[in-house]
Image (cartoon, rainbow, N blue to C red):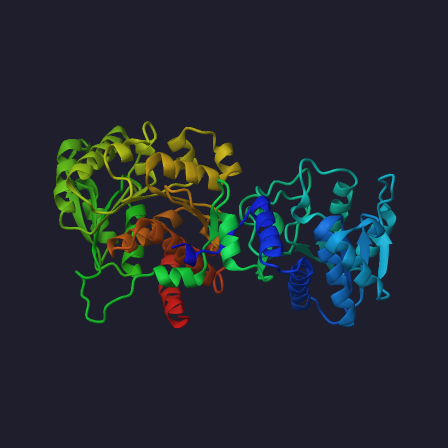
Length: 534
């Protein structure tokens, strides 16, 4: 499975990879730096217009060395470029020092903007940046540790006010490479060109907002070196990509029939919330489920039957409008024997009867069935008092949970602020706690395995920030499980396809106007795309 991965490395892991490549594999550090600078230059050439002036802001260390190499490469291409240096370039050593020497062979204008006393020449900085069409941020990169010193924070503030586009080198200066936190201010880049492997802080909140569009450049570090470095420490992040999803997506037999492609049972719905299971069913059918049945309270069956044309419905016993828990549990447990997958939770409600039905049903399924399960929304809330029940009932390894941050916060009994501050870490902890694969929705969505690997999804946009998007995602996950895809692969694949459908959708629909049913409609386009790019 690891060969499918695109690794996301912390600053420490990337340092290990760099040292291994240079010291053990004999790859010259200068070659890596030149390759990194060439990647930045390619992106600058992509976004600049003829005649645009470029300013490169450099700091100490190798990030500054990368910036100096960028300036040299732009100059030899006939592009107007100058350098704002926060350090005395004559004191730079190692590979960065060699880049100083190489740049000095060309008449590139270099301004030192922070003197030995730490004073920033604000007037000069504002004048030069104000005349620039592209600003290259090579100030700090992954070199930030602890709080940001003055006057670097002032210099970053001026860069953010500059009228031109900003291209950050490796990591936006001021952002923590591992968490994305800005201390206290971060460069807000339009594009971040990162080297070897992307860093967590430019993919996850809040750093993804500072990074802008992320471009990853292969600078010649062998993949096995990246993999070895990735295995060091607790952070095991990967970035989902198209070829990986294409490999995970089940192939369809030309002589298959509806039984071949699985029968999905969806348990959900409550008064005023019948739309949720309906959207799950529609997404599942559009994703290719052979047959879909919605199990709802008998008082809602007529409504569901009117909403759904292609899906079937089953009535669950109720007493005075609430589930008759024992009877409903037994009916669903008996039904499951004829199904290939089960989705529990869309629109189910948080009443006592619904919670009891979920817990009792999971207990029975642990004893009687091996059908794969997706737990969504209120089914996750039902487990909040005791998330270890999944392991207690023997369902670990056969289940996917799809919480949003609030539901995850209730499941692990932590403040919402803690979840949003470390989405990947809490998804990983929840997966270890429950034994299930955890798909934490958000921007970006992350998928955590019980073994500790976390995949960061690479698709999706703000158009998904509307009620019902999660119900569509549940239908996609459930369909893949129903076809026999293992939980980890099903969650990673569903996340990517769901986000990609939204990306296709906003090509013709404004993100404000994108509806969950639009995302469902574009699933076919994504499936065609995945097949045709094979």
